[in-house]
Amino acid sequence: MKNKGFCDLGFAKVDIDRLRRRGFPEVIYCPGKTREEIREISRRIIKKNQVLLLTKLDQKTFAYLKKAFPRLKYNQRASIACILKPRQVFKKGIAAVICAGTSDIPVAEEAVVTLEIMGNRVIKLYDVGVAGIHRLMENKQTLRKASVIVVVAGMEGALASIISGLVCVPVIAVPTSCGYGANFSGLAALLTMLNSCSPGIGVVNIDNGFGAGYLASLINR
Image 1 (tube, helix red, strand yellow):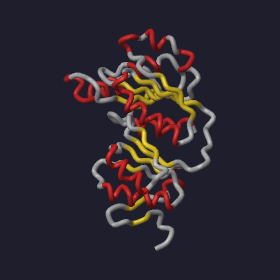
Image 2: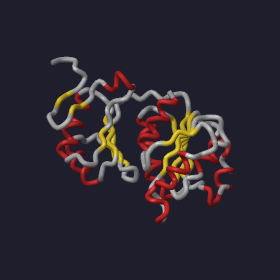
Image 3: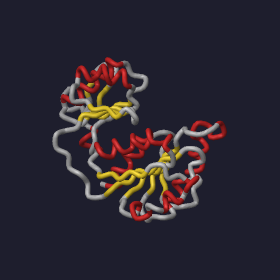
Image 4: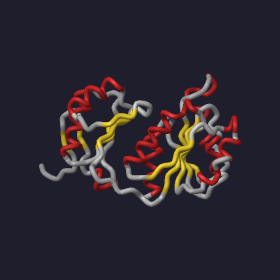
């Protein structure tokens, strides 16, 4: 059956119609899939001349895929890989990605790579958490250049509320699993962000830099 909008590989039904519906192709979440499954799904996306994006990809699997797809690029810190189309058009607005601590950078980088692949200009501001708030205040003008802001924070996750109180644009909060025992692997930060008293904050799942970057790109569009 032609034009059904997906390719049935038996183990996966690749949504080749998603680019038309959503403006960006299906993205491959790698954990739980075999290397061979990832390769075949990737092959089908590339065959349709679409951008290939793989999230939570480990380095050994990347090395395996690189043999089949020499143009595949890998960001080791973000555990994300991609093949871009030759021509990329950038959106007018600027997206800012801010993280509280150095330990939050891998999740922040996942958001950055996602935003850049989706055609956004990105500014980054790292290690400006509430333990030394003067580091953030030095960069208020940078914040105000952004059309949308992604805030990545672990521990108690308070940074998103502070930034939202300083700007007039949407803030997407990303709790991370960084923190000691009572952080409960990101649950404490998640609850703080959900209970923020500053309006204009949306919250994604723990360690979900990709989801934050994707949402920020839709807002920026």
